[in-house]
Picture 1 (cartoon, helix red, strand yellow):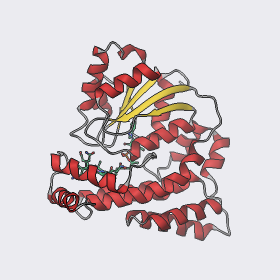
Picture 2: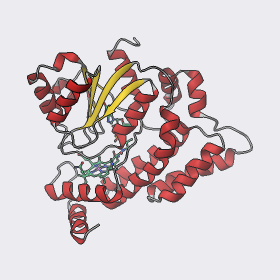
Picture 3: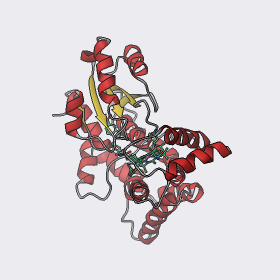
Picture 4: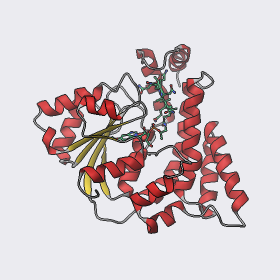
Length: 294
Ligand code: B1M
């Protein structure tokens, strides 16, 4: 990164408020993201929740889940599997791509399912990164390298999670709203949607209203999904929906919203058809809205 880039990162680090995004912070994050690359993947919900297996099974069906979840109980490998989860968690937290990639590969070789690695190590680690950032122990560069380490694992896991061989059951256009460059959570939703059989058109991050509108015209999706991860970019949902209404396209598809700070109440306020708190619920909500499940 250039000296100017680092200066911007330092400026971002000094900034103490997290629910407002000053221009220099955005520039810093954009610079830093360009430096470290974009993250073409996607994640899911809080891990280790008791009903997670049930939710995943509902979404994917028990046969497929057998393969996706894999085994955490193979007796001989049990302790190594536990170690792999712990080490994956730690190395992701420290932003170390190489060991993260190696551990992911080793875990898969030992028969651990991609979703186990995802839910029980990678996502909890990123949640911890967020907590450390909030408490002032981590700054933007640490967040970035952690995200980059996770990307290393996701590149390996994505095809395993997404492959179904099924015929598309609907078309989904997804994007992170203008001003927002977070894409890990959105991309995880994308993986899960693809895995559940949807054709997915990913518009990426920092998507302005006109690009959403063009994509609706071009792809005629059944569902449009918009993500926002900052309280300062959430208002873009309303602006986008208004622009879509103005373009006469609102009735063509369902619109759902999500992202860390978003709530059902907020989704109702902006006129979305639905809100989902995590990637699994996104799949279930989408299927419900399209009448595929009750
Ligand atoms: Co940023 N960041 N970040 N960040 N970042 C958060 C979001 C933050 C909560 C951290 C914190 O303060 N605790 C905070 C937002 C606070 C707020 O607005 N209230 C924050 C901030 C402040 C910022 C900057 C402003 C920092 C700065 O510059 N001072 C800056 C803004 C840049 C910008 O967008 N313009 C910034 C930058 C970055 C990085 C670039 C360094 C990096 C992003 C890398 C990337 O995405 N490629 C980053 C990261 C990594 C995070 C945290 C640590 C992790 C986000 C993540 O990937 N979580 C995050 C803290 C946190 O969330 N704990 C944070 C894991 C992911 C699986 O969860 O994203 O919630 P999540 O996605 C979930 C659900 O939300 C849901 O499903 C996903 C999977 O389960 N979901 C949907 C997501 N989209 C959905 C769409 C749907 C339905 C469900 O339907 C359409």
